[in-house]
Length: 134
Image 1: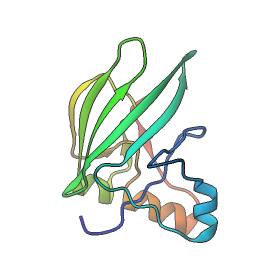
Image 2: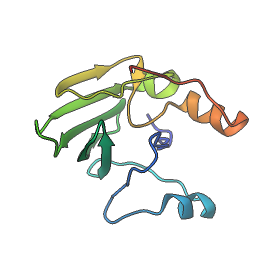
Image 3: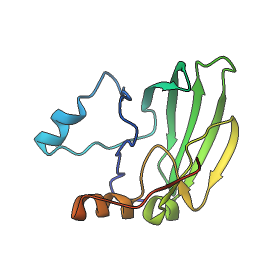
Image 4: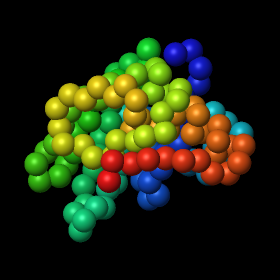
């Protein structure tokens, strides 16, 4: 996929780290484009169901979709790898939001990032339909 990847994060309160912390609001105001490339490491602070942990994402590939490895600092030390197809990154409205470890291939869903379709709807109308697995 040669187009810029849209990196809109859906969950408030998460932090994005990629060679230092990026101020997303400042980047948006400057009109900058955030591009995710192989090697980037993203860290999300998660507070869910009374438990706090860090969700660490290591971007492996952005060719023909996105592939990333992840690990969590939760009690189970959950880790895995996710492959999001190029088609899903273009058109999916469904999101996978539960990570239980192991390898996952997403053909019709995205996770962490929204598809180009969802992003364009948000830009053009200020709203978009997103279906989550919870």
